Image (cartoon, rainbow, N blue to C red; front, side, top):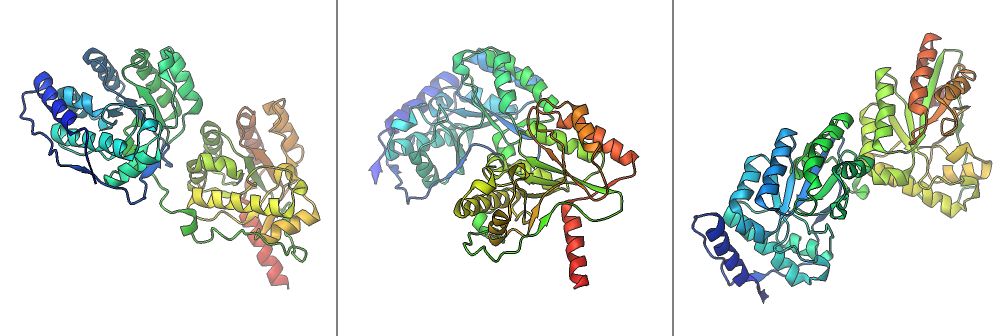
Length: 477
């Protein structure tokens, strides 16, 4: 064990806080406190919350001067917005009454280390001291021990995670949106940056003491949140809504897709359409996009009470798993569109099956349950050999389509997409559209749906047809 080097500094901070900000009695920290050695386990690292509800956390680092803080807190009050402040222990000891005012207004205050050092330059003992001493200041002045810690820059080190775990803290906090306000951008420039990257579960990082434009940015952020239908909230409230509870290996069926070099005798099931005379049709979606586009597509489908099949790219889902979960919670179904979105006919068997496994596990983790064991290849390209390789890996159905909307083409207007689809419709056909940023899909989709409804069509998910046809085939045998 190593005796703390900073105990004397901590006592001085307590006394300074007492003299400058409050008349309360301060009890010096026990100078015999020692660094607790790590057992090698790390605390959780959180940079984004996987949630389905439309919430975003606003966080601030540091405690600015009194006038700046009062202005900032007033703007937050006016915008009915709650935030989390990561404060250095030294400033908490110096300004406990200001910090208590932050808490009284409904905000959250967490551990910002003792002196805002460059954490990348600290060893384990130094890191432990920074975090532990700050925890003690919080306990003495505010009556509680923080559960989260973040560095000034948002950098996260192994030593931070080891020390936080040794101190029984919940997590080290990173960030998903950092506008780098130290570049002294305007309020509008800060919001433009946030607008580009924000999605549900985002953790926004701003500083209180560098760029005064953050104060004017608050009402602009409130307007952005209103437009996107987000609630801006504290970090704890955001994390309370997380849904991911199991690692992928803990989920039954995570290994349903696995490498299998013995593919020559595999019997693929390629499904293009349903053989029927009934006026029923399936609208399906491929690819991946930012939350705004995903939500727009879901909003249109909800408006017409249509359920669909989504073929998602695994590498995209890994970045925003909550969006895949949101699709399923809306009543739709999810299947694989590969991990890397490559031409599967040009991949080796090993490359292709590895891609299928990665995509399946990314979707399984996101959904917290396995997706459908369907696969749709990039660009609809398929040959017999490739189909066997895919089937041997555990894919039950290669789900194709026979109406390509071409909505991925940025040169296609909504009317172009509409005319291409409607000119090809028929009973049992499968339409492929795309969730891609920048296209006219969302504008074309209502036009297509309304025309199909007018012509007497109903809508189906692909699994319904595939299961019906499979049961029919069994009964005919």
